[in-house]
Amino acid sequence: MFIIGELINGMYDNIGRAIKEKDKKEIQRCALEQISCGADALDINCGPASKQPLLDMPWLIESVQEVTAKPLCLDSSNLKVITAGLKAAKNKTIINSVTADSEKLDTLIPLANQFGAQLIGITISKKGIPQNKDQRLELAATIVSTCVDQGFPIENLYLDPIVLPVNVAQAQLKDILESIREFKIISEPAPKTTLGLSNVSQSTNARNLINRTFLTMAIAYGLDSAILDPKDNQLMDSLITAELILNKNIYCDSYLEAYRKK
Amino acid sequence: MFIIGELINGMYDNIGRAIKEKDKKEIQRCALEQISCGADALDINCGPASKQPLLDMPWLIESVQEVTAKPLCLDSSNLKVITAGLKAAKNKTIINSVTADSEKLDTLIPLANQFGAQLIGITISKKGIPQNKDQRLELAATIVSTCVDQGFPIENLYLDPIVLPVNVAQAQLKDILESIREFKIISEPAPKTTLGLSNVSQSTNARNLINRTFLTMAIAYGLDSAILDPKDNQLMDSLITAELILNKNIYCDSYLEAYRKK
Image 1 (cartoon, rainbow over the protein chains, first blue to last red):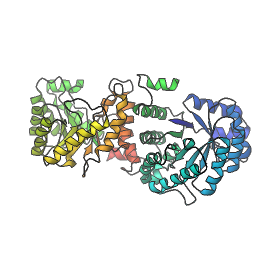
Image 2: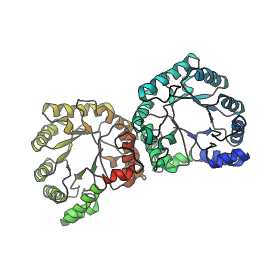
Image 3: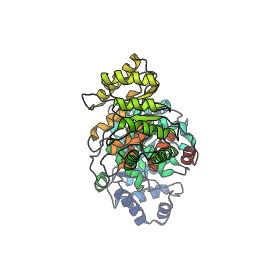
Image 4: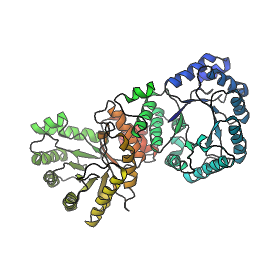
């Protein structure tokens, strides 16, 4: 499981303040803390309140790169912000994200190719959020076929089925889980799958429980990666144990500690 | 999810002692406590130390029946003990279990038919424990086809893929999960699936975590029932949340409490 830490996001108070005050130490502390908890990559998002994302994104990246060589997941729907981030990045990058709209695909895939970046394709389009797994699969196939046409390596593509909150789209969650399995058989080699986990529990009273239960089920369905809070210890326990059950880590009596020491 | 409480088992100290001293109150307390935690049925097992299981099984059943009308799952590999239990039972019964061996099937299926009992078929045979999902499927198909031949209603059959401990058969757990899905497509109507959950964590240091993670994954694979400890609150939280995600309970902010009040 490729874990992308979600905590460097301007929507969180500490990061919003750090961006505003250019408090590099706070950003670096947050980066290192997530890595020590198991993050393989770090999402970088200026947040909705950023007044100057074209400056903030490179600043965040430069701050983080000073303390880690882990991949960075550039999280913005603004092409200029993504481009500014790619230019600033020395670490490996993942563009988060491209939708299934042709004008987006035709811009972001060449950009990913140019910078050697990986790419998260989300199964959403201008028509809105898909209402079932067939629509998700259709959008996923559009993303994959456009990548193939443009010579983008499918091994570098992550498909995200768009996780919706259980309290507004409960009936869709099973389809979302099944999409994870279906996405893997779109092409050979298979695209990877990822998702923004915390969406599933938005505005609920049992966020951590819902997050870890959904993640465990998604891992059962073959999920390759997730954007999540690696500081949530119980979530990480669930993730490590789910991977143990799928024989991806070797069992020992202290398998939780062994994984964390890795 | 049809929850079969596992705690009335002579291998537990309190039940072993209660059987020995014919302490009916302790058995009844254990029955009611499991039901208050969410058990839909109760497993009844005299345990390996029982010297007179032909007397102990009916006594356990009579004790439990005084306080509940819930179905009872008669757990023994001894045909005479099962028969004694069926004779004593007024509540609905489930025979736990029959293997895929013809001499067992040819005895226990007619017995289940005679008493109107449900039946748990475990995918094991004299040849031993299956080593992969193809062998499990073959044994499951043998059980289903024998039931069909003998006019046993498939809706009353639970197939159990045999859960093995993660510390001895880690590489098999994924196959066991996939067997749950495969068993459902053996026939129309589909057989139900169940499993003895706590086997998965035997002799590990993180029993509860491994149990609830495996159960959550099994629910993702379509599991219909499990034999488990309903007093494990975190396990029940995981179960309730997994069913919520699959849209089997309706979301409300206090969905955990709502389920438990049901």
